[in-house]
Length: 82
Image 1 (cartoon, rainbow, N blue to C red):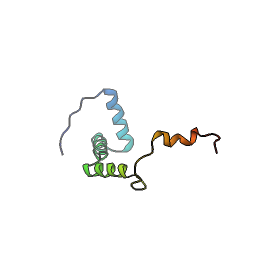
Image 2: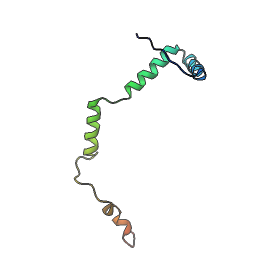
Image 3: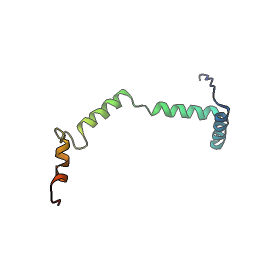
Image 4: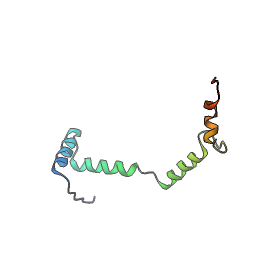
């Protein structure tokens, strides 16, 4: 394990100690868990590429070009409305 030195506001330190006590873990474990959670929340390059491909493809596959704004709202401009 590595050692980490932090400089934080005393009130924040007290709040962190209370949270660790509430969870029945040490302050070191609390900080480690938070840092681990942050590092896990970042997608890998492979995950990023897969998400971008999915966004480009769409949930129903490749549906061709997207409709224009006018095409989307054409129904709203026709009277009488059905």
